[in-house]
Length: 261
Length: 330
Image 1 (cartoon, each protein chain N blue to C red):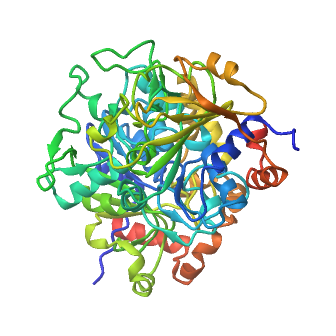
Image 2: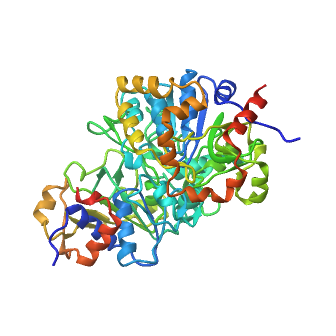
Image 3: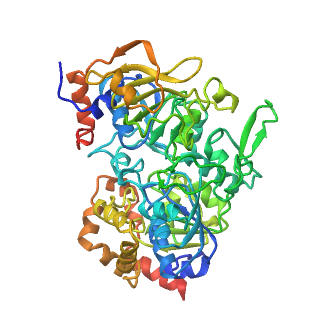
């Protein structure tokens, strides 16, 4: 039994466990790339990973890439194409099996805000945010087109809100079949993996509920860090601790120790 | 007789830019190769009120926004990835000095494709259903906004989708690794949307890390994704993307990336940055001295340097590229 691991490492490993061998996958920079390449290093050697600019077949060398077009990825790629190709032909088309995105805020239906933080609701007239964030990037395209996607986010009350002030990347919008109603091709978020546990959508209402907590957390801690009346699944379970093989694989990918800070 | 399109950076900005124009950057984004030095020259020549079309933010937009040269911008990603938030851009947005219209990264590529093909609109299956569709920064008082990504009916299925407006920027300054004097170009690394942009923009200026003999293009014509027939002018400028990376040529300058973003986080820092890194050099050699010859040598020996190997025999020496530039300018 391993006990020496960080909450961020547990989150990355739990996310990686959602990725299956052979899948066509797209990862962004940072935590999502660590989780994705951990899966490849550990249990999914045949995962077909790409970046949104069209870097294919690459594995990061020399540490976590600074960006999706970083030389740490360009160094061993087998194909360079374009955003239209990667995000369009392979993701928005509905072909990509799984993507991983991050969030500044996420709500009960898995809608993600990465655009800005306002002092309350925006209102009818659009106005600049108090704090401008990084915008949609390719996350909206992944959220619209990928067969399923995973949201990785630190579990804090300010991030888990009843309704995001700005929907940058659509989850299940207002719930139910709202995604299908607006014509989105992809299947939506299959899980929100946090620093405390895993939330999954109810198949009908599409509202996220607590599916599992980590060995070091519990339902109570998760509820008090969630800004809506989070439902707890009847069969809520505890996620198994990282195995020593999993931790070793993750730490080979995270060679600069980003997840242990 | 082949045309020599090599001109100086200062001449390119004098000739092809003006206040209030739609200016597009062609790059591998957000922290990949971008013709950042073109933005420095826009500031040196005090261009104002620019409407910036950036597929995603880079240190160039970050700098132009911090300096107050951009009043409107359209882009997808607006951060600096591993280097954090883009302090100059975010401050300009938060203070209301710059209005940013948000799209996704695919949306920007599709809109450029629409411009390249001269289509009336591009079908949108992304960005729909989110606030990227409903909120329009350029028309803030209409909500939900029907004019940014209007809903249209697919004539075949009868389903509702969205419509993206095409982009036709006045000028695209596109970073390429290799160009010949006629403007045929090879990009090492991903194109992002440089192919579409090179056809969508009304005018294209290339910023090339190196000038090669046209025989190089004849050896690898499949790799020449931007042919000279769509190119107005070529600027020879090694390290045009600095402090960002240019695969095959050089790595990212991590220390300068961080210091630059810290500087752009305040008005005083921005003024100091402009004094020290925008207005301080007289010409290309002065710019390379500013980066530092030792830094240049370290960054050039990066892990991707092998990508340049097939092309090395055609690289024109520095002096020859400068002589060709001088020849075309007279």
